[in-house]
Length: 624
Image 1 (cartoon, rainbow, N blue to C red):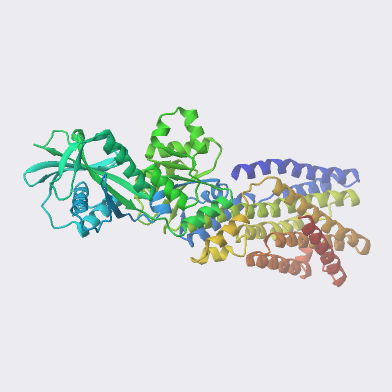
Image 2 (cartoon, helix red, strand yellow; image 1 turned 90 degrees about the vertical axis):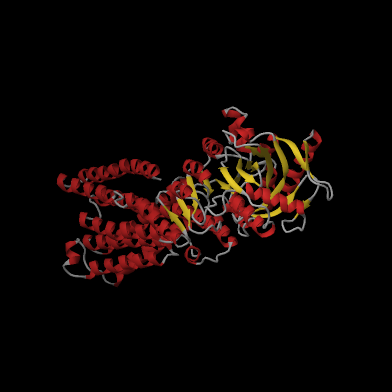
């Protein structure tokens, strides 16, 4: 935005100087004194400088950030709101963002059967106990939601059996793919492992087999058993469950390297954990799609699980890419695969960064939303990083540009709508500033060509700028863009349909062709209203009276154009009314009137100025 405003200023400055030079040249050619000619040129050139332009963007961004705060969206830097208006791709970490983030153990299985966790079966209870042993000490801090879900289920459905004494723990890390605990049960050492199927199954060489009421035995894991294991994993994942494999290894003594001992494992079974989507997630995804904003899911879950959740949310699952798929490709092939994929599974922090960076290199404006420490690097890399405060990690919040105080995805729609609305407000405010000033220059050049001197004096131009530029433009920049925006900021129960409709009413924009047209329309209307009133004043009275009528019409037309841009805002109406009241007081107060080179107007003068302003404003409305 700063770059576009700078470019606009660079284009406007030569025109301003040219307008002042034209006024000076025309006055001098009409035999005016050189000093008077130069004074008129300097006056119009100075008046045409849009003084409020540097403040417009800052004021609009701060106002938008304040409104978002009332929606539970904390903005770390006001410039972030600008990028919100240009976002075309949002990457979501699934767990805790699109889903509730509260995992519950909902299924246990072996190669033959599947049970609910409350099943009265010794095999399911044994499997639950072994899965719990692979978790951290329940008396200490339990960081991962998967561990909490497993421990809660084991405590409720499989407690009261032999003691277990943990000796050493290997905590879960995304790059490792499993968690393990070395402990002592009865008179033996046992290493219990719980983790991702593709990591743990490949380290299994034996299978714990149970048959009826016979004592379980460990048998070699055959190729047929491995195929059945893959089928169980896929079946559980297709139910939308996060699947963990539970395995163990009996040891005679404590190994020197516990992590190195995670091999030659015996497969015990599988546990499935459910994390259901939030009820607001599907409407939010639908709204994003309707507004041409692409949605990507990035998760560490199994590809089948990720695809199942994506289908529930209405996200295309034609191409599901894993972290392993990305690692096999060179940079160009990886970028092409990322561009056409919408679901990414089994990815780690480094690969999340690669996904976000590749989308940015493809020319997309990317937002990344997540709540975990493994999302922090991708959040920092994205054009807009979005952290979830509720149950989210400190790393994710610290890396984010926006922080959602409540994990409600509806707040994202409000933020995107606010970002797009801010661009429109700035476009309107810049139109007020630059278009009005361009009209002043055109009116002055035309008036000088007709009469040989500038229609308005230096002090009158300063009065015009005071009443039409700074305060009305700031009011437009500060005001909500639409009537529903105040409701969006204050009503937490606003529906996704309302926010989606509001977002659709604000297409992505920049300070481009639309703004240039708005400036041209405002300049043309301002020139028409002021010139018509001033010309009629010349033929019905003195030069000072004509100048006063032209001044009133010039200000009136600009204020009318301001109301067209911000007619929904009470603040714009208030500043317009205040400017009109000040203008009336200046024109009708003796002494003050003389200071500004005016004379009090009678009913005819006010009628000429008011009619010209109204007609010019109406013409501007039709042209818009």
